[in-house]
Length: 346
Image 1 (spheres, rainbow, N blue to C red):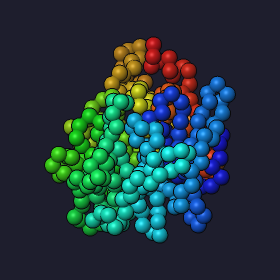
Image 2: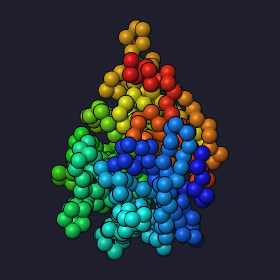
Image 3: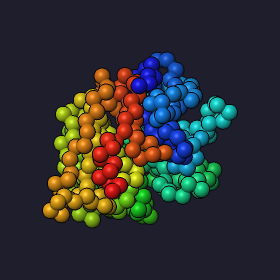
Image 4: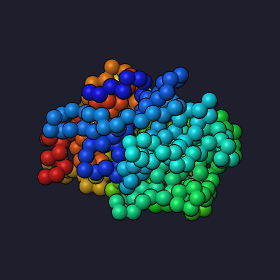
């Protein structure tokens, strides 16, 4: 276990650092200056060690690392009641501010929830496009051409009904998904128009959206109603599967980046859960009768936190390790049981 020494809401994998179990997490202190901790997990010593600590003036709600460059990341934070986002570059053990998106630089209502990088599998190229998620919509930016705003997707209805809480960029198609309260909207990034809508997809606020990394069209949504739902964009109105994951809020849900049979969830019930959803994966596991649906189950429940678990992240170095952060600022490293690994690999 590693303690940030302050409340926390986010932890992410440093995607561009694929040689180590490398993560960023940040504090959420209201009045004092905050910190971003860069931690490394040593699996030989079974220990989380601090590599660097960076000062950050404002309360941080989310971090988004560049897919290929380990020295670039966005923070989303509260600044005098206005949610802004800044792109940082690690330079000589310090943070260099590169670009900031705030209410003064965009036409949206105040409030940037998070920033999402364009997905890429090419580790030799730099992803230059990002989407900033705002309360009333989202904006597509090109970081390579003077930080140019390219397009905007904006909800024109009552903002109380359309506040963005989650967003995800489809790695297989030019689509961006937005979770607004209980609804899901699919936006075509070529036309910047809504391609589909799921009303009342959940019974409470949608807290997270994640795409299946290996199987096109499929994605999941997590919600404060405690459930995780799995969807096929070609059949957008009905969920393909529903898991009652947590007794209270489901704060986050993430596919394994390599083995899409596995996913993680965490919740306000202080639990982290590892799930196998083989039936909807790109390589379903079969039972003795050739059926995959009976294989779906909760693999393991991790009860290592004393407060609500706010976020989870898979290691970019090895897909069998993951980290979680509680609201109390404690980071816990865990791994997939060996028996589960063998079921997938053999």
